[in-house]
Structures are given as structure tokens and as C-alpha cells.
Image (cartoon, rainbow, N blue to C red; front, side):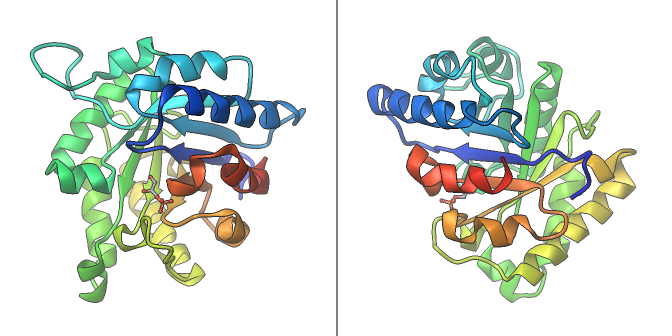
Length: 252
Ligand SMILES: O=C[C@H](O)COP(=O)(O)O
């Protein structure tokens, strides 16, 4: 991996976590990370928004950053139940995930929606983690690379740079299933994303590309060694410091 791409190991807690236990977990993670004198990767936890401020505070003097899982495209207004990137930043977030497949599926988010949300993230000076990935039927139909091209081209925010945008490739069929693509599959898709980005931005070679989908301590080493894989977006195995640390440890 080129030195210019600092790996990012990101945990997405999804709709999991209550205050007491979550604080214990982030403090445990922060304590482990703080023992590393010169961390070689960035570490991120994206908890539910209800926990953001407390977790940001608990991790404040550690190498662990916190981020949001989604945001509205607008800064404020009459959008009941939504949270803006402005609010995430105000709560201590440095990153925000957008376009996760669970948002695309559960909330019908389109590439245009994802792009608008990512642009809101950039306006706040946060880093957008833009998720892309094919479903099982798209994979079986042999359209994986077309789907990825469409998502990358149409979800990428205007003004995207390597400093403010990360792409996460998450095959939908690999999320929470224990199934992972082969190393060759991951390599092929990540190379394809890099090629697409090269047509869309100037510093595409420095954009971090994460792999997500059933990453755990036992497979992280192999996945992180794949060319153009610059880190991971981890769901289930990020919920406890004990499970997440072996993944972080591959890069830190
Ligand atoms: O955002 C994280 C991904 O959806 C991966 O989830 P998972 O590690 O539980 O498969």
C-alpha cells in the first residue's frame, strides 16, 4: 500500500449500543490504541447518533475517532427524525458513512441521495465514507462491475478529494452473513473502483478504499493485504473492543 494512503479501520455499530456498555467498549478500545506510540492507521467508530457525544468525549485523547452512520442532505429544517452533518460535527464526529446498503435498501436511497448527503458531509469539513456494493442477484447476473461503476460515478460528491472522501466496497451478500468474496474478487473490484476514480478526480490514487462484509480478526490480515484495500468497514465484529482490536491490530 502506498505510504500516501493511511489505512482506516472503521467500525459501524449500526442500530446497536446503549450508553453504559458502549462507553465501556470505546474506553477499552481507546486504551488499547493509546498504547501504540505511533499508530500506522486511523481508527474510527460510528455509533448510533444517540451515543456520539459521549463516545467522542470518552475517546477524545486517544487515536480513536467517532463518526455518524448517515446524515440528511440539508443543514437544518423540517425533517422529523433526521440528523444533519452539522449536528454530527457538533456532537464530535469527524466522519460520516453515507449510502450504506442498509440505507439504500431500507430507506430507498438513490445514488443522487447519497451524493447529496456526501456533499453535506464535505460542507461540514467531515470525511465522507461512501458505500457501494452489488447484491447477490447482481453478482449472479455478472453485473457487479457495472453496478459498482454506476454507484461510484453517481454517488461521488462534487469536490471529492482523497482527503475528504473514502470509498467502502461492501458486497451486500457478504454483510453479516459470514461469507466473503475471494481475494481475487476483492482485488478486481477495488482495482475497478480505482480506475473509475481516476476518471473522476485528480488524486484518485490517494483515495482510501475500504473493504466491508464479514470482516473479522481471522480474515482481516488476508483481506487487508489485497492490493488497493486500504482498510475495512466492520459491522458485527466492531461491537466489542475484544473483537475489533485484532482487526485494528493488522494495520496499527
Ligand atoms: O458497515 C459494515 C458492514 O455492513 C459490514 O457488516 P458486517 O461486518 O457485520 O458484515
